[in-house]
Image (cartoon, rainbow, N blue to C red; front, side, top):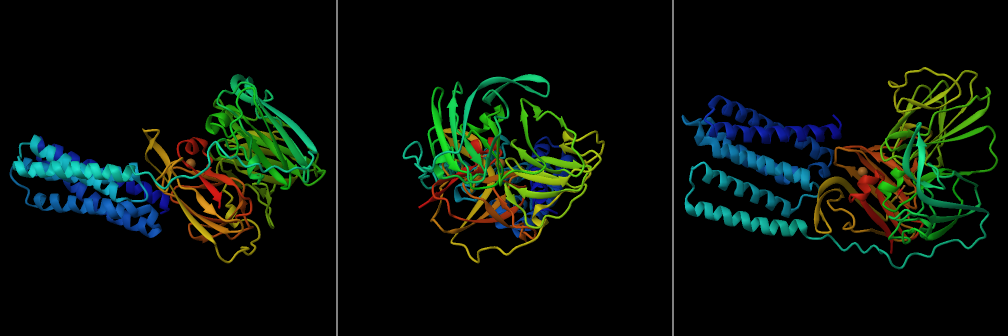
Length: 579
Ligand code: C2O
Ligand code: CU
């Protein structure tokens, strides 16, 4: 069983245990004896079953089990210890076990709340809060059911509850280390002085554009979605003037996957101020990396990118022979882009399809009608890519795959999530059942260029309750904290840095570090065995543990975030900072 399914199974069992303890308690107050005993027996079994799931999760990694071992297990033991013996003695009046059953229900429910609302890491504060909740709820039930604890017992219960509540709240709400990320001052002035060889102007503004045959309201660069395709030859110096006509929430340009100098990275509040209506900003950098990239606004990026402020950036090594097609996939107002293209291609012509996922979720791409190779991922050429046939690829949010093939005499079609977006003629192949390519085992391996690490960081991805501007929100968290309260990762120039990224949550998190490509070392303890994978965007699926590394060779302050941009805006962003 994968860790992801184990997490899901454990959650389901925990919910069943809590619900049946509570149900048993309720049934016994209503004197429904068989129902009460049945539910209690079920709860007992479910509670014991968790011993198995929690042990398995702890073996998969302490991150997955910490609060379950430290908080849920003791509370569940207390539940069984209090309710179990009383059930065995099953009194004539079933109402007599109501409070013990309810206590068990409160204990398992509050442990469940710790997992759902607090997650990793387990803290003393969360534990105290959970206990306080159980004590308070039990005391209230006790009184309400007239089982009447002595005055002093209930007084003690109330005092314990209030005291733990106060200390617990204090502990959980205690702010983490000061963020220390420069915001809105002292922006880096890193920009190359060389004379530009390629100039572009991008003007952001609201527009009406056509998306699969319907006019929709969008935010566009130069009136089009996607924005103009920026192309260059390696060595070119690009100068891109960004103007904002009327996007009130501001605009910037971030060069996704392009490891530009920090001052050109386009992160508002970190590398520049957002460009407001009527303002402009000029980006300049040398096109040193060949490959497929994209640009997008980074100001309220969740809304801005979704509304259409993105485009393609392609840097070629020189003149290309054959056909070179970019396929930036996006969902605009619920409609898929681009519109399907059909073009005739003569047999024998070499074709490169540059697939780009500009959405916040994974897409599945299937190329039918020809064997092909994956020549590059995230702009970086793969080593020894072999020929694939009838194989689909999953591209994470923000990711790019270059597929290459020689056009056969018969038609070829590219399907995205089952929809043909590019073809050279009619193809009717069902691609839904094709196996998926695992890039970690594709191509020829090469040794990892480092033998040790100067810095190691662990990022545990989860959800949790967080105070944002004094308002509670259910944030997407990293190590239990949400942006802007996550301490930055500090490195020195030249350090070799190791990231361990752990997904404890039930949803995919496409990880994206700015300014650097990371080398994939392993996934779930399995070393990467194919071509070296230098990625800037990779999906960390529920229960997965990725180890990736890079050399800190691009000084500045860099965003490091989930590229499901809704998650990024809801807390899942931190910063890598050079000391
Ligand atoms: Cu493509 Cu910070 O993002
Ligand atoms: Cu995410």
